[in-house]
Image (tube, rainbow, N blue to C red; front, side, top):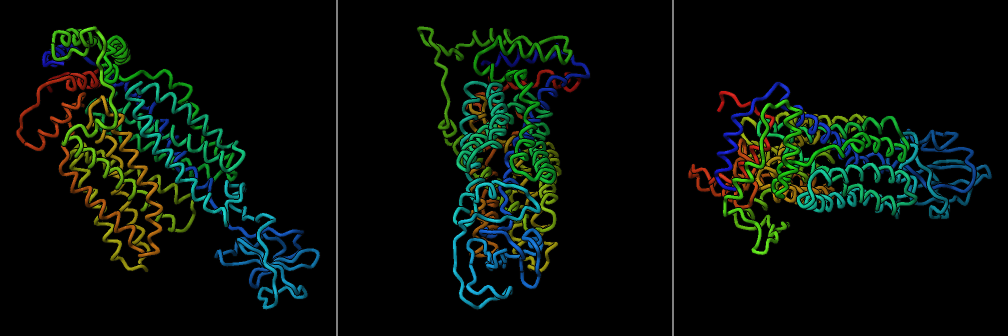
Length: 588
């Protein structure tokens, strides 16, 4: 689009007057969209309690008459679990027929001499496998997927694959639905993925074996990730510059609320399939109304669907009680007069280019930007989950701990919003990445018997990496043009999920050196912070619409020339994006 479009839009903008309800339409669309992000947080963390492995021992053939655990004699196994302290413990059980068995977690032994019921026994024993199943501690959870399908001992690796396979689905869904949203539109993908969350969420509760459970959860992960990625782009394109920071960051707040819902439902419901149904019901309200959400004017304009874009803008004007509406036809007429905007060949066939992930590496400026952004996504996810997995050893009530883990994210997003609005996106991201690296080093020098300081330092580390992890969504959306924005956020989310898959393996390195996981996170955070110095600042800048505009933004930052790039479609679309949100007054 030519510079004349910008001048025309500025002139039309001056004619618009706004009322107090100028953001009513965008507010309704925003809250309807981000409500569903809570369901994403729910499904991401549901396995924390659903796949928990309780204390267990081998089952035995016959009825138990008495149980012995060290020097304590009990009438039933249920009375023993409160004294269970280690996986190396075993239970001595006497059957009604007089047989005495030693019950370990993955084997059982039958004593050859059964005259005296004592905990210590030096005589001959016959060792058997757990062919009679297992006995589980149901004092906390009546049923989990582990107890349902005996995912212990030689099948324990299946239980450990539950969360990694879910994250693999998240990884794939981020890329697939991010690309589809750029091709088919944001609204269609949001409807499909939100409906998929409800359908697959309920289906998980009625799966008949482990493999069907993993497959359905894999599909649930794909649609959950797809919704979260597209929702960020959707709200970013519907709100203007002034509200974009807080609007995008509070999507994370609703995700954190989902984590707290998991803790609450886990505390109240102790049967895994009932627990899953209750969690999935949270999706239902949005599924019933999401079909009413409009497509974003930015995407419609990028696809040359001017009439549809005009309809959405007219609806915005009516809702916001704007006296003078923007006419997209005026912008189209200016574009048609501009020879540089012809997108058809001589025979009238459209030559609109279909974009793919290779466009994120179309030139040196965009490629360097993509590599840096991907590294920040990976580091944010790696650090977030390494700090989170370390925090489960805090002790106390696990439901309260998970609730606080979700709650601690809320203030970090507020700090991130203030920093992004006052300092800028890049100038907030860099200090918190470097701060998280310094905290990782600090933890290494805290004596191991200073538990309170270690806990506070770990929470500070999670807080700092959480700020970086939260703002990277918005920063990524602002760094890329409309035509590949969903694809950029989706590919970044893919790198984020790679980090979440790697994080558990990183924690396993504690067996090599207790501080090795923190050292790796610190190095990655420091490297990411240094590379981020080369990225352009996007605070107060209009969203770009073409790769040329995005490239020019990078060149302007690098050359520090202070010259404004030529006006183009991105500036015009950004002004349409802000329609109905900013009051035209003496600020002009």
